[in-house]
Length: 251
Image (cartoon, rainbow, N blue to C red; front, side, top):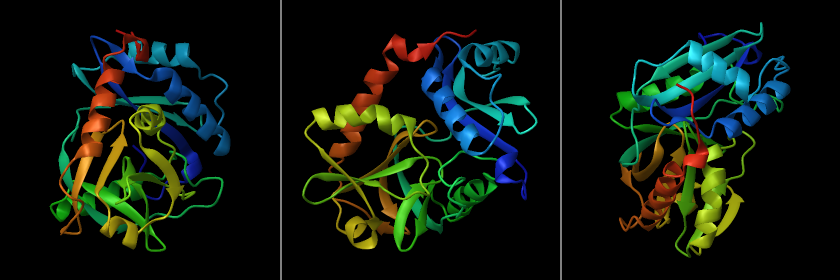
């Protein structure tokens, strides 16, 4: 994990779900994003592909049976593999707002080496008794510290952050067809205070958390407690997890 003061261009990383029994979840999608972000950060990725990452994972097997694996590519072409257990997964949580880190255009939205700002945002939320930091810029929620927020408005429309500060979510991309098939209309825009205050429900999705239902923000209750969206996303994720085609066997 990058140290405080590290340049954003010092490394690029991705975090994946793993199981010793099944392998790594959505490996190919994560490698594609890793390469895209490395290109934006001007980090050499010529030696990186799915097979090379599998070999690195085999050489560095986990002690845990399941959890999260972080693959980092440094600007000096080193690959670092670290494992950690799940922190929160598929549950109802409380969130706190935190000012969003801001980056130049070519760095914003990438999983870069100066990630300590996001870690500090989550640590601040945890110190206040919450589970998640929602990152705010210009009075709108732009992203989560480790996941992507989704707001269900009072008219049944799903709103996603359109901010360039948001990291593109692999989990959200896969959930999108399921949500459309369930009858939701999806819009991209500003998740401003008025929208959030009047929403029917708010959730966040991502590799690190699966799906979490946000029941309060800054100690204020959110939504109508019906959890319709949370159940829809949980059901879709379960289908994705149970599909063996989404797992790459490694160990």
